[in-house]
Each structure stands twice: as structure tokens, then as C-alpha cells.
Image (cartoon, rainbow, N blue to C red):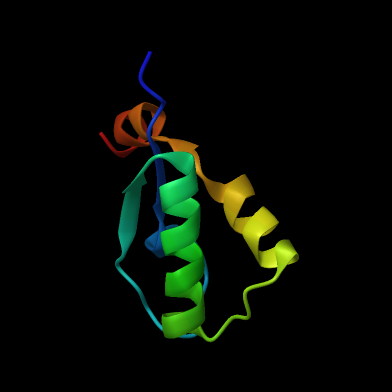
Length: 69
């Protein structure tokens, strides 16, 4: 059975720098790329707290697509 795809949309979260990035894929891939994005674009530090916060913001891709429609 294929792993459920996850998505995170940076536009949905307040930030000092406006951002239009959307990342989708496996949970681990999305988490790693979202942390990298948070570090390089938004100046966050890669901490366990940041990773947990980002993980809590991930949505199932199907639900996010339905919500946007």
C-alpha cells in the first residue's frame, strides 16, 4: 500500500517574508524540505521543536486539495 502523501502550504502561515511555497510528498520528505525552507528562507533554527511544529501543520494531500476546491 502506498504511503499517504502530505502537503504543507507556506501561504497559510504568518511570516515576516511573504511566501508562496507548497511542498508535497511523503511525510518524511515534506518535513525535511519544509525544515530546510524554514531555515534558508525564514531564518529559523533546525530544532526538535521546529520539526514537531512543522509536522503538526502537515495535511493529507487529498484533504488539502478538497479544501482548496
